[in-house]
Length: 544
Image (cartoon, rainbow, N blue to C red):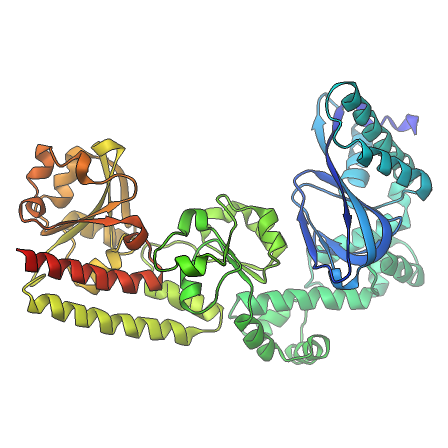
């Protein structure tokens, strides 16, 4: 091994954490997101699972390395006495690998790029793991240094058994062909072609393939394509022939027949059944789902939770945080992740956990269109249309009420603002950015002043952190002024001349609205806001 010039001199390997995971009977599937290089060492029992989407056999004596950002899954239903160590470590380049580029590349390809590793003899390997785990809490002082040495010895053990003949190892060659299958599932390929790529015979290839995956090449390719088809059936409304082609099937009729054989139902039946039973993590649009009777298993409640009108439903929804926790999402075992483009940079990681759908924010796409989009995704367009019709009826009734009271007749205007920075700044909102804009402008028909109208027409919908000195540009002659209190209210500006010269202030037509009732823009909150603001206007009129 020494003649290979292994790059231990140029890399620092540091112990991060280690735990022992044992499957009990009826354990649920486990999904683990790797933040560091992580060794999965099977020490008892057997089962199946996947590493970054590649199916693997988990059998006593097997060992795998998962790279950062990779999802590791175990299938609880197929686990029999399965137990394994999960060892995470850091890899840091601390010096130039000059003079050893080939060796370093081989080290990374074989050891760090993932896949099954040889660890025999098992007794020696198991003892090294036990010792590392026993001292896992020793991270400082002399004991910490000894633990560091144990990790180096374990990594050397792996190198010694896996690197010397890695490029010519038929198992590695088979593993590379599996990677190619995942890279392009639409490519038509035969077992003969795969064996030729691995430079081994068909019989040996099939044996090694099943050793690694637990399935024959044909069954594995079929499962891979069916999983892609199921994903696309859930997240797109494309025609069946397009979905079939994207999943690697050239003949849509053969695809439909094979799908029914494998899944047990037709593609159409699958879509109808699964969309109504979806376990959804909603990083956005959770309120729309709840209004349609679909309670997400998880949501970003840190940012978007808190509506007074959804608090009872939100009690049963897991808050996955902001930024969202990949581990929490994986533990929820979702069928679908729904998001806008705010977390687009993490889309690849989300999509490893479950099919992920991005509905980008667009200020020109109104709330009705959002509701229709989500409704079509969960196969419940009827609920979307029912809400829209119900809201329009309520809005017409509210407009009639305030008109009868002599309110909001003709071209009366309204402005929605939020005070910030101790009264030094403010934000202004359009009709499609929450803060009751939909109820005020669309529902009750109040007009937007020219500057706000420009904001709405542009699709921007919000201007933030503007100096309070330009507040009159947006609100000086407005008839009604709505101030959203999201931490700061009007008390910090009521004694200023710039405030007291506003028409709405002088006409007692300023309404301070709290966040919990008036900031949210899900269907349930929208309906409540329409009624509340109608009543506020009527009560103010009666008090004059």
